[in-house]
Image 1 (cartoon, one colour):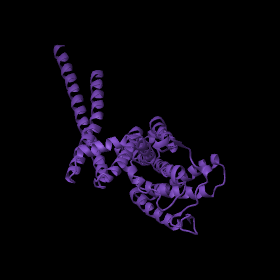
Image 2 (spheres, rainbow, N blue to C red; image 1 turned 30 degrees about the vertical axis):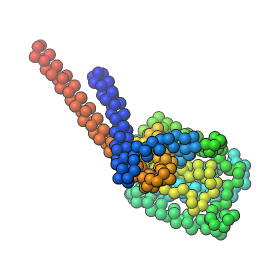
Image 3 (cartoon, rainbow, N blue to C red; image 1 turned 90 degrees about the vertical axis):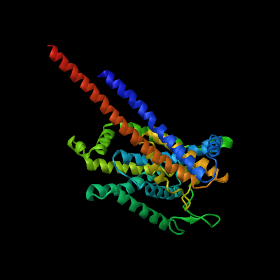
Image 4 (cartoon, rainbow, N blue to C red; image 1 turned 180 degrees about the vertical axis):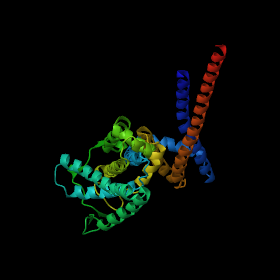
Length: 375
């Protein structure tokens, strides 16, 4: 039996490596065909992407983008591990960033007090907004997909209403952009000046801490075990004494709190205010990255870096004469390839494991029968 276990574990390792490789090959082939269909040389496009993507200024850009994408992926993954589809991350982080920007612009406290307050305000706003969907689900059975979609629309309307001169916003010095009151310089989060490569956002380290906390809580605590158990089987979890409704509500609150952090790198490290051009759509990007990373903290990090790389390099390709829609095509192809490849490999691995176990049990049964006949 030990020999069988070692063999299965070895196959599992090989299958684990085969899935991303299969997805990568499929994505490259489909992307190459798409580029060929536009009349361009895919070899030249891939070469241009590679050389431009490893430039020092591109590396800083990719890390900064990956910081927000990683936080979005983690926020979505928390719901996925619970078998919840928190599609409202986009509204949660935008409303959280807006409220935090209003608070930050009004604060006159020193930075070591103001920055934590701004971050906590964003997390609380995101948690409360996600908590509405959690409350509706556990009390009324409302699907979190429906409620979070509606909450996204409500958040957009609330921001649009409050982001007007005379309410919680003002015109900038040029009189062309509506924004919240800019944060005082004491409330800026620290950055790392890398010279000609650009400014590396210090919130990158907060994202790393969030990833470590995600790994530890879900993989090394009773709460994480209960959360994963509910996600796999609510009936089994309830039979073991876990309150399913409490876990659903708690998971939505935590997912929303992490979602509240998504806009903080931009607010505290870059724009220092909330305006109409504040980044939108990152919550939906987080869904793709969580799928791409298979809800693993390391996988999500790799997915976030890949997304930042693709955004940087395909934008460069547009200046080289390639169609601007290539980015969306590549991103969609990669996500589909990963989902399909992992499912194919999972089914093949399950079939192989069943065959191995069946063969081993048959051999043991045959050996037992032979001993009985000899006796």
